[in-house]
Length: 341
Image 1 (spheres, rainbow, N blue to C red):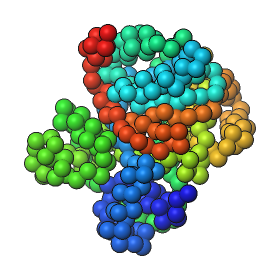
Image 2: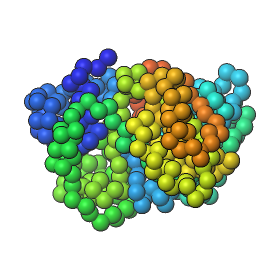
Image 3: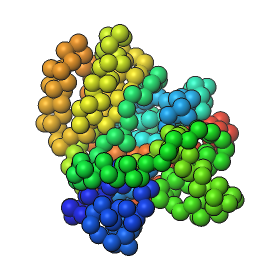
Image 4: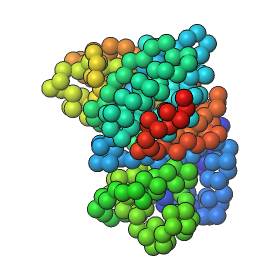
């Protein structure tokens, strides 16, 4: 279990992922050196980490799909491990439900997405079948979830002081490499980023600030699920009247358990991921959902047995991060596939 100070530290970095250690320490009532050392220990132990990924208008230009995979007996974790090594796969879940694996696939465009599913995923040994659900829109995603270990006043003060002024979003090759570096270490110093990118420190600082403030890049602080107050992941496929899709998604986003909500293709048109304390709380979440939104039909559901990869972090059996795969969604699909053959 984590100490209250460690949980509060995670919560502070969920609100302000790159807040100065002086501000983090002030918020927690500890010294900045102590705050930095405790965070370094959490990362080293794989108990907490920062993820970086494209967001906003940049993410909207990418092709996103959720793929249900049926595997040969005894092969789900082997297939999951193979897919987890790919830069186009941010998340891999081994689930109990309508499939063996539920994976998220992100590619530069629909053609790249098609190439990946047809030439890489479907041809992988151990894969018996796939069903691809293209996401037309991501209504909410995991960065909104918090452990709520600090007070609302602390959260508000931290958000105001750590917030950067909005900046024009300009996304180019430099920003692509910037995302990959922040994926390695979301708190990487601007001087290190400058050295890795071959630019000046002032340029690196300006591009980091602009990407984060403009919404082109998002950082989120993750906590190992076994240490989380909500360690169980439940996924629901919902059918919603098309004219109520957006309002339903907005209502779902107000539920504290909801981690992600996305519009999808197929018999179900809304995919919802929730984090709950246990399987029984998943049932309670379903009950709350249909009571609040009686026009919603729950088409199917799944419980995650093990998360193999979460937004680029490779996890062990206990959900601790052990390594990281760069989320280079813009990397070409076919050249790698041809090289693998």
